[in-house]
Amino acid sequence: MAYAFSKFGAEGWSCPKCQQPLQPVEVNVKYMGSSFFVELPGCPTCGTILVDEELAVGRMLEVEKLLEDK
Ligand SMILES: [Zn+2]
Image 1 (cartoon, rainbow, N blue to C red):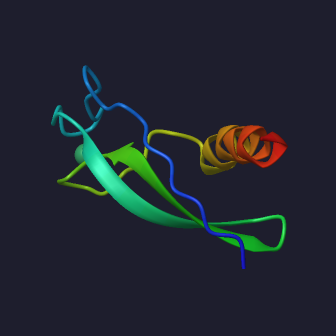
Image 2: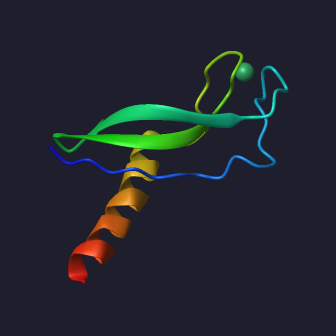
């Protein structure tokens, strides 16, 4: 199983519903038959994740590819 970890800065983000500053939330994302572990900016009050999960994983896979090329 593929395993990777990615961080997205949550500074300056806030939940449109709660007006709460977002905090990093660890999310397990299933993508293309693999499971990935990513950290996304989420609302501590309602749990909303404001980053598209597929976008997050897609960006992470690009990083993985860079690492493999070395
Ligand atoms: Zn919220």
